[in-house]
Length: 184
Image (cartoon, rainbow, N blue to C red):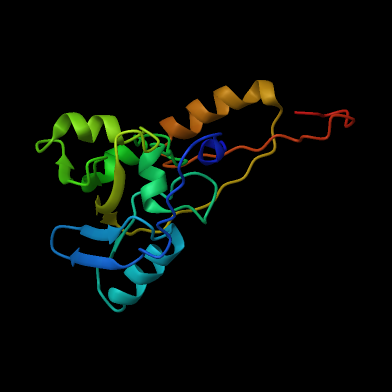
């Protein structure tokens, strides 16, 4: 999202071919995927694998405003979603496998290789290559969309009001035509 992958003199490793779902624990709400899988493919797989299930699992929050983002990429930048209460992606990660510069693999979680866990999530690949990820899922539920057009000076109060009323997610977009009388 910020162009970090195009730094001068850097190495780019494309993991987009690594997009399989490796394991799904429907009892505990955990899914293990290869790091190149993109969010839409994971959501489609979860929907198909749980078709007809009374209480299906889903992702806790879709990361960022972009759809074509890999799970590994989301971890590498510790992407955030639009939740008003949830942490960025780190809050949804159970564990991941990290390939270090010497070629060795490390399983990383809050209890196993915890320092690497903290460094690699949001580390933009500086600490190794994330090859597979186990995510915590959440029970799926329906949301109601509510849209309001407000002036920018009203936004902070509206977010506080909606959060206090139980809104789970929020987003805003500014009018970006600098010639418009209601710019931003």
